[in-house]
Length: 472
Image 1 (cartoon, rainbow, N blue to C red):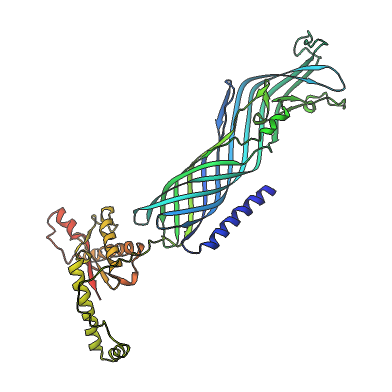
Image 2: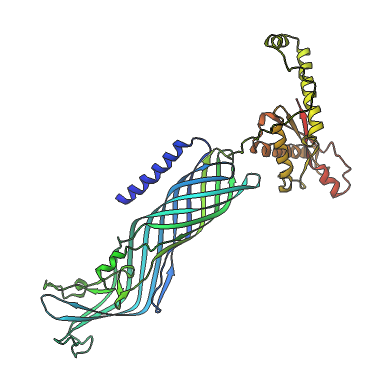
């Protein structure tokens, strides 16, 4: 219980400390995962290891350095399971019993033997994550990093018939001539099950990878779905346990207590993880492995927009009547009639329009097109929209009207709504990339303004478009 409290405290302290240092571009998340979650170890030739299934649940914090890269930390609860099966097991060992001075040679035989292992860990991950756009409101992500697993509790359960007996050695160390399992002579009977707790597990050092898709619901909420794999790097057993020389099938020493001759009181089974079999460690190394599906609900400042690029340019000399005015002159201008002010704004707009048409006409001349009856932005249109983002950053006083158009299929009302949806989709893309929404407006012309006759599919595709119009 103390270990669980310590692990949760460390995880939450790490998360809160990191969050206090970085108040912007942060993302908190809650996740669950399931699939293969097991122990990996080698058994003798007559044994068969079965993989187990388990899961994870956790919470975490991600800090985004920029639009693509982030670093995450958290805490997760992990469950691991595995099972070993044997048709036959035979073990021999020697033991001196008190108050006798004899050296006994013990023999145990098992049939249809199974042992299941269960372990619970608190993992502390530190993951470096990369994400990139693949469609509007959809990103590919991949993460890699280490985890440290803190053991909470582990248990084993065993089944199968097990018969035990012993014969003593004579003074020359030679076993007595009587046969094994001779009725009435050191025959300890048969048991069928045992269980116990393993407290000798160490910290688990893990290499972790995951990848998948990030689905953005709105400006704050998103869902990660993907695959994960965790590879244990070290033997999780405390090797000091071998110094205890535990036998796989073990008979307890006699103390002449009444009833101790009963097999249930005289016999114990030890876990294969921490015992010897025929004089050697039963299992050489025990590592962990997990693989499966992961879902992660995240809350933050979505979508961690790129910083607006400020592009320094030398504009060609243009007529800018507002340059060089004193405070008194500006105050005088503010007092003029609405007509004079509108003339002033028109001259300013005309100067900006003239500059853009001369230096960067693609800001308003290029268009984007759409599939039939769709308003989703096509991936091949991303470069054209990204270019407009750069140009809007270059001209911070420029405002755009996004005008949606359709082909001639469908009613007038339906095509008006479809044209408006296309304009809004383009606006949403530009806003997500950092363009202020106040600089963008939308409108729809439906099917009323085709650029070419709607007499074939190629022409209809040209008419399914959004145009970009420079406005005041």
